[in-house]
Image (tube, rainbow, N blue to C red; front, side, top):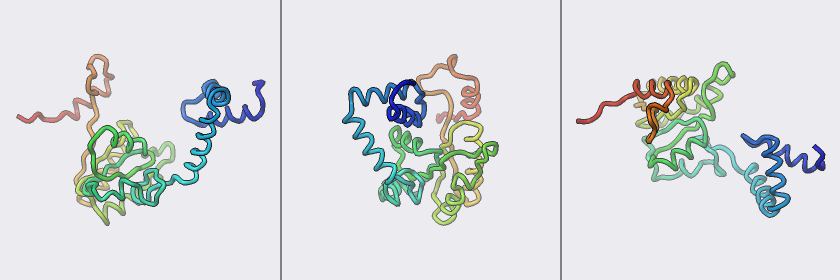
Length: 200
């Protein structure tokens, strides 16, 4: 590339974002420099502050500026419900799409022995303490329907059962508005094995 060294550094820095390759990074950098320098300055200042101030909630491990996040500190939330998710983006998805009013525990991943990710890497010791010291009425497992997600769900289920806590798993299957002929085989198979009785 024949650009100036600082421009090269900006383009390379933008590549740290997921899904941003060399061409996308170049487009972003040129857009900020040619058309939106104020936006670039604002992005820079907010990014710097966010990197310094945003950490993990002491209770649920979600992203927050405080020691305890807004969800955990909200006295209106139902403390009898605890939902285990893989990432902060899962919390956002559930909060935006549902009326769920309970609490969360963010695993920050899923069990994957081949990648060297074990229970201690997911903070399951912290979750175990929480389940024994302040047990919820129900643990809702909302891990993704992957091989690792299912293994993690099974592990969480056993942890909850040791403490006599009811366990539920979010449903997986054919999406609302989807058509069976365009749905992949594993999704259809999972939907059939997880089918529910219809009330009469």
